[in-house]
Image (cartoon, rainbow, N blue to C red; front, side, top):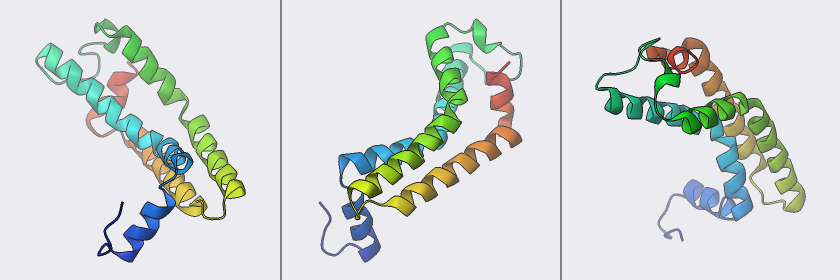
Length: 134
């Protein structure tokens, strides 16, 4: 578990997120940011396969040999608003179940993760989003 010499904030967070339901809620809350990392992983896999970093229309992602992974990533990308709403619902359900459930930290993680996802999608550093939806 947590060492007794750990910082008090660390002890409280580890204690609150120690239940499986809380861990699932936090993972669902962080899903938008995790999906951005998955997009980078897909682009890295494409770069290794092609020998160069992919860019818009070079190559078209549909030309790569991973149709199932591409489809799953696109479906997950379109489901981000529902996942964020689901994370907030899980947080509220967790609070109804236990007063010790980390409601506000989970909601904060959800909102921050969704905002980072929106900013990344709109600003598109490196052109990965444009390449992905090409």
